[in-house]
Amino acid sequence: MAVTIKNAYEIGMMRVACRLASEVLDFITPYVCAGISTGELDRLCHEYMIKKQKTIPAPLHYQPPGYPPYPKATCISVNDTICHGIPGEKVLKIGDSLNIDITVIKDGYYGDTSRMFIVGEGSILTKRLIQVTFECMWLGIAQVKKGAYVGDIGHAIQTYAEAQGYSVVREYCGHGIGKVFHEDPQILHYGRPNTGLKLQAGMIFTIEPMINAGKCDSRTMPDRWTVKTRDRSLSAQWEHTVLVTETGYEVLTVSANTQKPPDNH
Image (tube, rainbow, N blue to C red; front, side, top):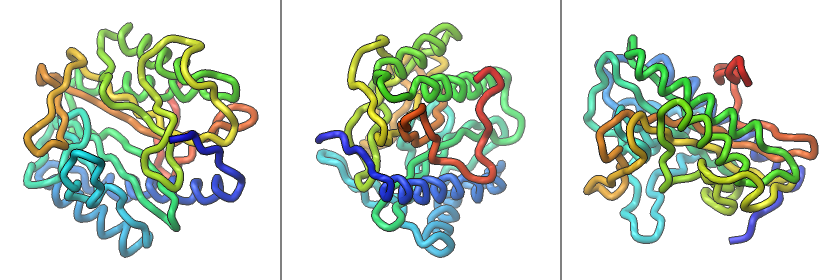
């Protein structure tokens, strides 16, 4: 699949879709508390997308080759789940950490973003992993500019994560996005500088590092979607959709309550 360079109209449509995806996370934030199930969080998000936004939840019935259809509107990954956690009967308790991953379709264009949440007061270890992962994402974003390389993004993320004693998940990566959910380029969250595809203005892709407190190895559950850490260590992930501009980058997945970049960014 070739990399698509978006024109001004397509970039405008992507700004809308990405803002709407981020607004789903704004909406759901007050509901993330002890006693609620991940299935109820998914139901609330789904209803908000369909009724309030008139968007389509992209994950629902999504079926890549070799996978069963994904059964829910969101991915909610709790504690040692790295990604693609299927919302269901699990009830959140104080201290849990979770990633809520939202992708909406608006007028044929996809917006994709995720955030981390802690239920109540998390442990120092949990808060540190989430903060370092947030910083990793922003260090990756900071590499984005016309003429830079995909490897620059991965190298910045990997170097920082490993310096903090954490590991980078290898099997899953960021991706190009537009009128297709997943397209080229693949954005690895590890790598070497000045390697891989050269970035051009008009490219749009996600940066979504998955960082584990323990080793990077993962295992896939029998549902064939849910991916957990093999050593049962905590995992965290943040995701933004980013546009390469003539002068640098623009983060598209922003809304009223989007977290600001870290102070050291």
